[in-house]
Image 1 (cartoon, rainbow, N blue to C red):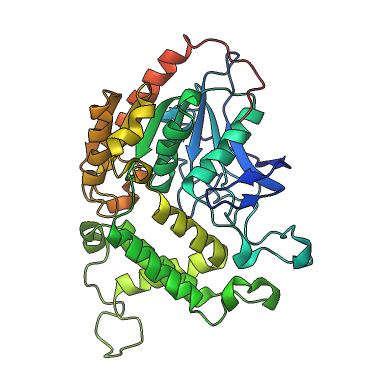
Image 2 (tube, helix red, strand yellow; image 1 turned 90 degrees about the horizontal axis):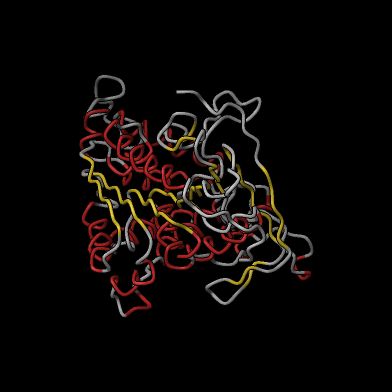
Length: 391
C-alpha cells in the first residue's frame, strides 16, 4: 500500500472566544490541522480523526525533511489502507491545550496582566466536549456541514462518541476504538499518580517553569512510565522482556537498571520528557477524568445516547486491553442497542493490550476496512452540502 508521502500542517485562527464547560473561555486561539485526500464535489466524504493523549494532528504521512516522522496512525490511513485516502478526505486536528502547535499552555496569555508571558498553569481546563466544539468550528470553516464519520481510539474514541451527543446532525457514522463511556476509579488513580509525579518535581514551579528555563523532566519521565505500563498487556510485556537481566547476571543494586523492562521504561520516559509539555499532560489527563456523558442523565448511559439514535456506530475493543477493557465497550454497546441504533461491534483477540489500536493487526484492519468501504458506498447517495454552515 502506498504512503501519503509528504504532508503539510495548516493553521486556522479563531478570534471568536470558545466557551468552555468550566465557564471560562479561550480567546483568540489557533488550531493546527492536516488533511489527506480530496474532498468530493458533494462534500460528503470527509472523515475527522480525533487524537489520543500524546498524539496530534499529524495522523499520517511524513513531514518534509523528517524521514522518520510517520503520522501516529500511518498504518491505518492512506491510499489503499483501511481508511483509504483515495476515497475519503481525512482531517486531523490538534486540540487546544496540546503542545503540538494549537494554542496551549506554552503560548502567550492574552491577559494584559500577564505582560506577554505564557499561559503556563493559567491555561483554562478543557474537556472532551470543549475539544469537540473547537473541532466543529474548524470543520464548519472548511465548508463541511456533515462528516461521513468521526473516528478515534482511546481518548480519541471518547471524542468520537461526544460528537454523536453534541452534533448528531453533523456526522453519519461514529467509529470508536479501544474506548470507554468514562474512566474507572482505577484509571483516574493512575492519572492522579502521574500528575503528582509532575507537580512535585522541583522544576515544575507551579506550572510556570517556562520563564525559568527548566523542564520538569523527572516528573514527566515517571508519568510516562506509569502510563506506558497501562498501555501494555502482561502477555506482551512477558513476551518482549520477560525477566531478562540487562547484563546477564544480577549486580545486586537497588538503583541501577537490572532488568530489560526497566531499561525500556526509562527509555520511553526519557524520550517523552524531551517532547511533551508538563502542563499539557495535566490538562489532557484531567479531560480524560471528566468525560462522563451519563453524568447529566442520572448515570443512565442509555438516556445519554438517545439523541444519537439516527447515527451508525462501529465499536472495536481488544481482549487484552485492561485499561479500556471490552467490558467498557460493551457498556456502550448495551446503551446503543437499548436505543435500537445501527451498530457493529468487534472484539479482537490481540495480545498487545491498549496499544493494539495503534498496531497493524490483520483482523482489526479487516474490520476497519470493511466498515469504511460501507461508508464509501453510501457517500454517493448523500445530498450536496451547502457551504457556510455555522458552528
